[in-house]
Image (tube, rainbow, N blue to C red):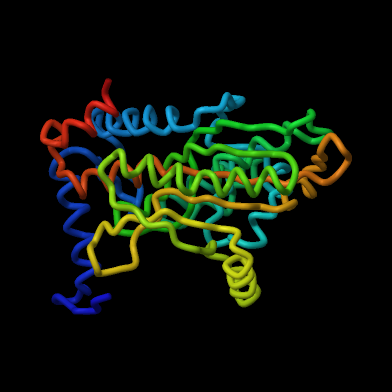
Length: 312
């Protein structure tokens, strides 16, 4: 990987900035005042919808379709244990529940240009960090024989402000989740590695499957990350958006959770064992960006075979 510096930016940082500016100039993304937070044009949404048609076609087996809002109960969030591993990515909702006098104090602070969020209190909702997280509470108890296969699609939030358009703070994941035995969960994850590569190949993307780990926080997190790699619990399908300047961008993630969610949400298999789970998540915006980077920003010039798959 190159570490060449261009002005005050590395070559990689410059490439990311150039790509961001190209997308904004083309009107595909809409800039906001917050780094990594974008609006999407109708054309960008058409690309995402086309990708999703290909993803759904690859899923094959019937799954229970679940769609959740971008916030979910704080009680469920706490049971995921996400805050223990990823406090730096978490977003929690706060709201005002004070008196008229406190509201006046808040307004006075705002008028002085001071911070006013100290008058807000935690609400009973948290921003969704992984599309599958709101689903697990629904399955507390005993699974039916054969377990469950879920199709979950929704917005996720992670606090990662960045210039790189592939690192958005709000993005969509289409996830296919298996709840059942350890063998079923592992088979689900493993089968989606090749299937995911086939999906990306059909979209004209050159993807690679690589062992990976989540960005766990702190000193203990480094141990968790090493263990995740050692036990081969996470595989990412990556595309090199910036050539050899970095190791590639993950656009699909295939994960084995083992019995983590089964244990914390009290989910058991039909034979009384703690349920295991696995999911494959397709990053819809990242796949769209990979296609725009690979095929160009004018969709009508993309390979006809790709367009026919996306827009039958």
